[in-house]
Length: 267
Image (cartoon, rainbow, N blue to C red; front, side, top):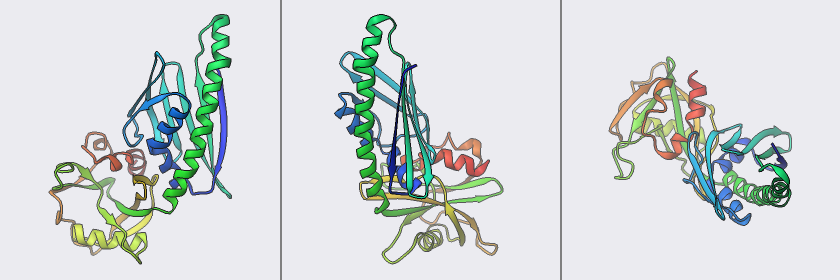
């Protein structure tokens, strides 16, 4: 199977670069620059679909990995794998495009003239856009979320409003106010939303893009020993869920992108 490799060193941390990979805009823009029209949701999430066309050729790809380690899109005769490697000078992005070329002399012409040229254009265009998007996310405003665990279960809450989010599930949290750091904001939000006191831990998973200048960053958290039991002050309901419940919930899109990280946290 022919393949093309490419590397890019991005002057940003792995969570920001992983978040830039989740954002479909750089990929869609890069594909268009290479002559391919892609259609996808706003975020690349595990199990999601990406379709596209180049002339009469129809592309169908499935997201088989989308987490802090990178992204993989796989389809019949085509795959795009991006791995992230932390270095002392930033995050190294390692891209690999693999495809199956038709057999025979015409297939070899296709491989050289179309396959390799297309893959090179795609990687070059995507690299430029990925560097730019990662830089935007590195300086973006932050919404913090809490992955509160107890006894191998995760606390989630069900939205009561607005209409387009009503009934869907998310992690507790909210926006970081001016002058706050992530941990202080998350402590305050959990007290306001849940009536509970938490000890905030390390970030988990990638930074998830919400808007061009806004992202979701989730931290691990635990209830303090003397915390009141969490209650649904601003939401319709609360649940403590097991790892097996993660895929079944009707998550908000940004929270769904964190399922791989949450599953790893609980298992």
